[in-house]
Amino acid sequence: MYLILFYCKALSNHGFYYIKCYYCRVQPETMSRLMEQFSFPFYKTTIAELPERIRQLMQTAQDATNEAYAPYSNFKVGAAALLANGQVKTGSNHENASYPAGICAERGLLASLNPLIKNDQITALAVTYMGDVNLSVPISPCGICRQVILEQQLAQHAPITLYMGCPDGNVVYVEDATNLLPFYFSSDNLK
Ligand SMILES: [Zn+2]
Image 1 (cartoon, helix red, strand yellow):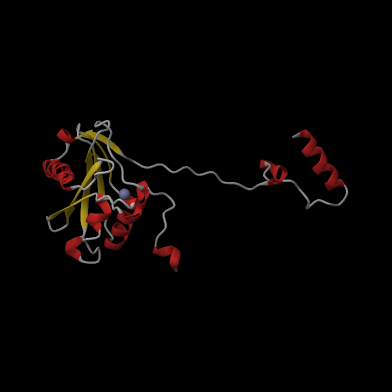
Image 2 (cartoon, protein in one colour; image 1 turned 90 degrees about the vertical axis):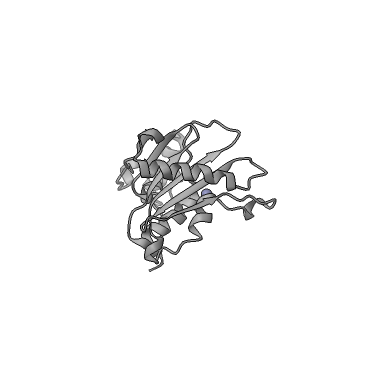
């Protein structure tokens, strides 16, 4: 490191100031930086402590795992959405021998909705699972599903509370889908 510094200093002294190694270019004293941290509220609870309507929603999501087609992973995911009009829609994951052709429960569910239609607006979305794994850890949507959930939220102009559950009853929830995807891509990037 000292040799690199010495070499660059020598170059600078001889009028080759712009020829600098990577190490020198990233020296803090030569940069103007602003560090910001992303933080968001999330809640840890149990199914038993949730309001009755949400408890039912979690149970519906759990029941939806029975509709999953997961012969390869045996990781069965169920999702249930509470719509603004009180209806509940469900989805489950469907795997495929051609793995990328499979689809997650969340996206399967959301594909059946149109966020621009008022009756399809989601107020709460519950996700849980069943499988040969630790059953006490709340599930969280994969990255692609987070993007799709966010698209739904942005299009309907109303936040979606996302409940992430597990068979043992532990729940983590966030009250806004943007919380799970900082620096997300949206239609604003296309303007
Ligand atoms: Zn997913």
